[in-house]
Image (cartoon, rainbow, N blue to C red; front, side, top):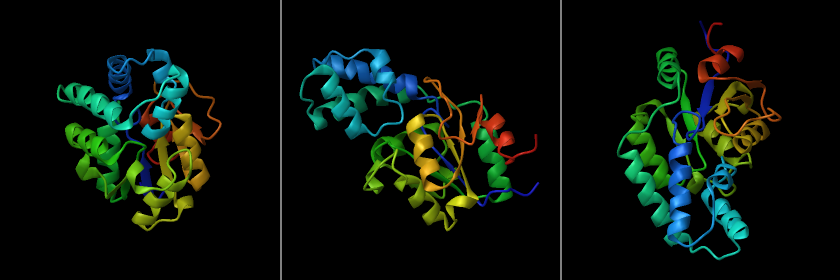
Length: 217
């Protein structure tokens, strides 16, 4: 079955890998270690937001100044401890990536994670070989929900946005991909979605791929 799309771009956390809960728990612990009163529901509400914006929202929520380097060091350390025990993949992730590889469809990653943590997670999950390019927070002037990450990803793949399919879990990410002109499949993770920025909302990656016509129903 030929692909109706010339390229596919995936978000990472909460979309391909099941790291949202791990990173959220580590983030709450990091905040506590730095004396910041932040609970898990609040940290979960920051899904899809880049880390610098996340820190600004934590500052507003806690009513305190957060030193970026100290927070990132504490959060990254606690995340790494969890990643070392293994990073679970989202259902259907390997199957879908394998199908795209067999068909020769180029695949990119567009994540709000910083370059270092993104590389660490991709390597730990064993997914690096599937991506022709990785776009991280450090590669763009404006992160999600701006369209920049997706525009850069398809530019690197040499594909027009209208010929590319995006997979996202968060509202922030779906908004970014939609604004860039991609067809958007949203598979919600922890936070529910109204699908305001998605062409298809699905319960799983494979269901979303079928809804978009990427794979046979």
